[in-house]
Length: 599
Image (cartoon, rainbow, N blue to C red; front, side, top):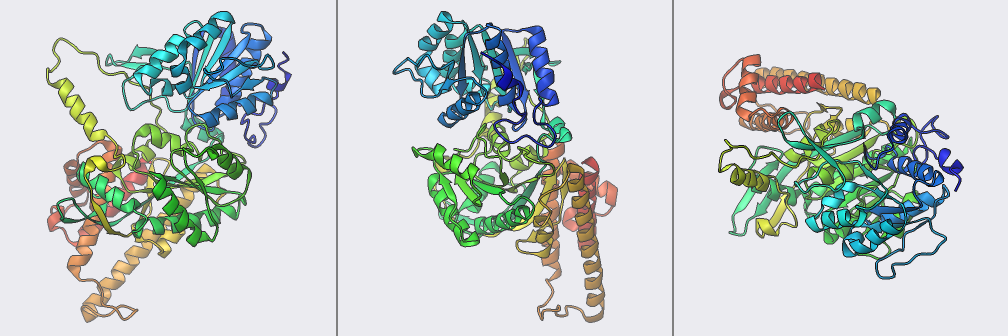
């Protein structure tokens, strides 16, 4: 078999290659290929950020090994049925024929095919079939998003059993960490300085490197808070502001209230996201948006809301629909505005024109969040940006702030002779605190009563920008109107300038309000309305300060009390409960300045 087709494989295949790179591999792909061919290993783990071109790299290696007769056939293992077909299409265009319909029921394929594509679930159902294939012919196994082999103990055992005899194994992942400690087959683990086993990649290419190289898009996270009201199972009415320091259960219920399609939070955020998509489409005419929903009922409700917002029916993709893959392909190839999906559009699913996303799901594991964000970072041409709207939930803000931090899969701390005998129980308790809200049943039934949305901040490149403002305000519009084509450094500069302008405008407004108060007391404002009472102003400022302290806690790990103490030391004045409006505002400005400086 000739490798000529694979040699000319574009670096973003099957997507369009970015500027000036067609006809050659990207630098990371070339370096990883050279490393692989030089070392000639049996097992190889390549970790590359979503959108970097792992498919290209893997197919180039497959073409090399097949041409050199190192292997005689290929097995590709992917997480989903949709990805099986996607791999087969990509391979076919470079001269490698792959059968995506191969299954354990028939256990046969045509001699026209060089390889087969299967799912991890399919391998778990018939591990001995795949083992026999590897024993009968020298086989290269490509384990796409290999962390899925640890989704359950049975999957991991089946994957190991099936492919232990394989001549070569190439493992790929864009998210090399899991939310559990299940070992990933054929991945090497080595103890770190603390003796904790961590996964070891043979080649890594992270988001920060890819962003610097222009391989992925810069991502702006637009966070929205707001007041939530709901009724508990006991009949008590509860009100809380999304983003303020709350207990785990209260945060989960406030989050679920925000996602309720009958409230005002979701409609306001969808309206803002559609406004942002309209701005992006001025520069990128076929840019599309994706709403990730928790369940099918919510997905249909969000689609109805979007139709009212933009006048166009979105594509709705539900995982149990037989035509789900065709819907995704049709949306990817078209130019319609919105798609709404329930988990179906996950890692590896390529819809390169996605530029705006709404994270409208209650799933909060770091793995799922990273997979979701990965749908928006694929570059097609220079200067494209991505915007993701999300609720002001501490865990999500933390993940967004850690976009550029690489992670390894950790198996856990080995027990020592002096270990606390209660440590295991304590670890289980901490794990329980980190568990994601699912469909809400474990939290007990409740009734969402109402919600509203307010623009909170923009997170970008480790910094936070913007001042809290109501949805539909001019302050919000400043950020929704950011051009859709900007270089990463231009995005940061524009965000800093707009925040400085807003802070200056607020300072001027505060000074003007003070002058009016001195002259005429509680005079009416320019709209004939009375200014808010002082206690209301202080209450609003305290909420804003507490929200920023909470965000700073999740970025730095410092306790809330320590952050408040540092603010007092920096700004002076009494504790927050006794501080004046001016003193609280100074602390707000100070912590925002810290965020910018850290970024």
